[in-house]
Image: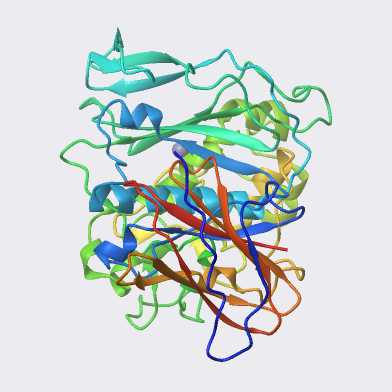
Length: 459
Ligand SMILES: [Zn+2]
């Protein structure tokens, strides 16, 4: 597809316009950080102002969600339907969050990829592969089927990219899982497995149960930066009852009193009894990034009791961390990442409570660090603090069809507006340097397509 380029309107009633730079640049500027992505469809649906996703930072790793498997099957994440677009926003928000806080930047290009990934516990005996050709499942010991899907839609992996194939299928009726996630093992970028070497492969897969009995929640998507969405929690961390004036679920009916997670009904009545897609996606992405039973043993280390003894985990928890397979043990709590004291069941706990959202906790981050990931300790680095690209919003469509977008800018920084229809090939639309701290409004031609995303790069 060719995009029509048009001179942007950098005008702003509150400040002198910055000098525009027209036309296509030579790729993203060095050290740009891409802070936010807006789906153009949000203009029409008006369901969520801005429809914020986020793109990963250009200078560190990027978790790329590949929806081809879903598109060839149930198309549950179809961005052309309101429900599908909301689901895709949930999943992309989760991936963007992890992309943004994982700061590794030295993963080599994988020039060739000849791989396959397995999926299991599907109800259907036949599904489509990535090319849309039917493949017959291998019956499992119970009533489900498993599949091996060749990665025929890509010939390699770019530097600093981690590819996650995404699927959605009805699981077989004997499966109690909401979703599965895992990494794929063969093509390694680094000499993973050697002592002292970080775990690193090219990617993995996550897939979700879309049986009729499963009700997913794909609302209240936090965008790339969830830290404004944590809400408030009872300052008494071991209260006698769960107060209704906070946002967090203090659960007392099970074998232990635990902060189960963010009570979604405190912000959205529609979330009652649903399974939160954002939180489950974070959980499955942790598996896909390598947090599995095997890797706890092989890379992080376990003691004679089977507890994890990775240095970061022990420092955060105060001792070896009890495990349950590839998870922390049930009811393991930690402080929510960059939350200033909010306590929650960890994301890597084996279960989640309906109606609750679990955000990444410090213990989850520590497990990633013990695999070799460089994980930030707080949201924004000083370098980008205040640049506010996350306030990027689609405002409306103009009578001539142009799309009006706005975002906050800080004097002295350079901003690049880009567009894509596939979340992979980004085309520069306009760029310019800000001369004052202000809100910048740009009119730009619309781009045809059901899936059109815009993003802002900052340097
Ligand atoms: Zn799990």
